[in-house]
Structure formats: structure tokens, C-alpha cells
Image 1 (cartoon, helix red, strand yellow):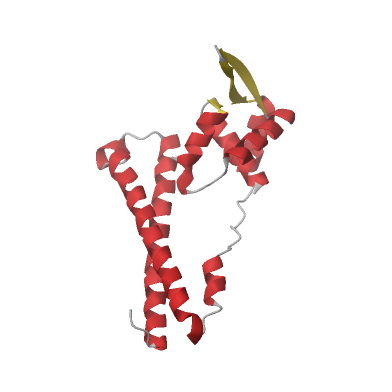
Image 2: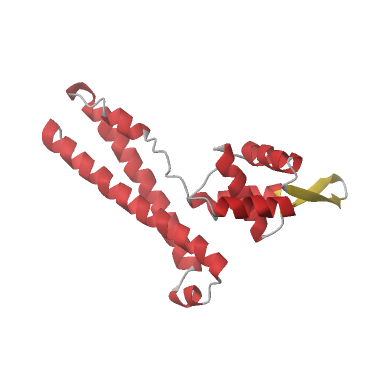
Length: 187
């Protein structure tokens, strides 16, 4: 996780100089539909990147608030990102606790697992609605034709998120229907 977070941060800082706060906000919005990291993870990794001379920061006075640190890539950071981009991407390691729970499917816990599937369907529907809302707001056909290449990547990541959630919802509904059919439980 930390190794990958390093390259997420290097990528964000390559796009634009940012404060830790701005980076965290990016995780809460644009990057959040394909990567997550806590505030603590971001700041801890920024500290490591600074120690390793991959990023530097400029302190900006803010009156009675603590100084604001604006981070930017160093030449070493640009080289590290460049080298990483030329390595083949590793396949993500799948971990899905829902599948582990389903391995425990027995007549005495069907109801519990159906509730779990229902919760997952509801969360997925909510997340999908948010992503589709972002798509409608920022990526109309007219806006898409005007996107710069670097911003097209964010749209493509959003589309991956939408299609992934739609696929998951389809699987969840199929799974729920199969369990109901075999367990003969009322919906």
C-alpha cells in the first residue's frame, strides 16, 4: 500500500504543486473514486518523500496559523516517477470480505447474508449515483471534447469506477436471486 501511495502522491505533485491539505481533499474527491488514503497516511508518506529528497516544500506564513507547506517534485522525484511509469503495472491483489462471508453460506445464516448483500447493493447504488452525478456535472459531451490529455485520465478513471460499480451491483443482485431461489427464503 505505502509503495503505491508514494506514486499516487508523486503523480499528484507532478500535476500541480499542492499542500498536504489540498492533496487530502483530492483524495476526498477526484482521486477518491479509484484510490483511498487517510490524512495520516498522506502526511506520513509526504514526510518520507521529503526525507528521501523526492519532494520539497516551501513554507508560507499564514499569520496566526501554522505555516502552510506547499509541496513540489524534485528532479529525483520526477526521475522516480518516470522510472515507475516504465515498469509494467502489477495486477491488483483481490481481497473481498463479502466473498469470505459467502463461503459461510448455510441454511442458518442465509438471512444474515441476504441483509449483507442488501447493504452492499444500497451502498453501491449510492456510490454509483454520486459518480454518475460527477460525470453529468463535469463531463458532458461538449466538455469531453475540450479535455486536455492529463484531465482525460480523470474521466477515464471515473468511467472505470462507474462500470465497476455497475458490474458489482449486477453480480450482487444475481447472487441474491440465486440464494433466494435455492434457500427458498422470502424476499
